[in-house]
Length: 341
Image (cartoon, rainbow, N blue to C red):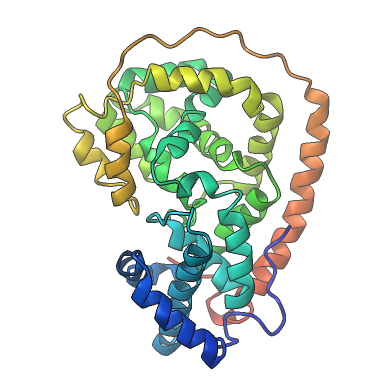
């Protein structure tokens, strides 16, 4: 499934009819999340193309608020989190209000469902897959990060926004969204692991302490070789599927070495992480100091023949991404080469 702009329903298609606008006003009055959504959307200026007329941007921000509140109203089991708006705005810019509402609502009850629980339990569990993936590929890097007690909170905003908040080039964002839409819901954590593995030497050159490693990893490079990393993430998913990592992820939770409650610089380091202030507060309450030693597990053997399927997938997604970028950017051609500097 590719992000493609629907004819007549793109970001310049205007607002819904008067009845929908009235319903939107009622939602704003009734929603317990309205004030937080409003604050987050007002802070989302960097997610819009530079040079976009202020009136057009403000109109899109109003649509963004309405989409979020409507989805939450239709699905009371879902809970808003800071960063959700970064996902919604990506769909809004590509396919327009009507289609974005349908797509994001479906994603919210499937791919994004774990992030929309009332607690951070499931989100934290997904983050716990990060270190086992790294351990399978590069035990030296894994052990260094464990010794630094850096944990996984540096990847929180990557995961919950599908990298939409931390990447400045819109073309890279939509390319990743195409990839994640076509894959298992845990693929974003595999991509996060691939980024860390790609930066192996930078990490190993750091001082082995939480603040230094966290600061490095939370500043994601903007010139990553995305196609190579996407292919590598798919390859790792085939080699080490979630079912084979589940035991290590559970052990990671029991033997957490994030030092969230013991390292004096944790507050300073995590303050650099946005947009997840509310999530961090919940996350802090769930993290535990070290209470055991990580289990030593046998590395799973892999049938590498199925990599051919992954290669085929990434080629197909690469073609889809070209269509996505064209449709997403053709309405603002003068900014195609300088989106979100």
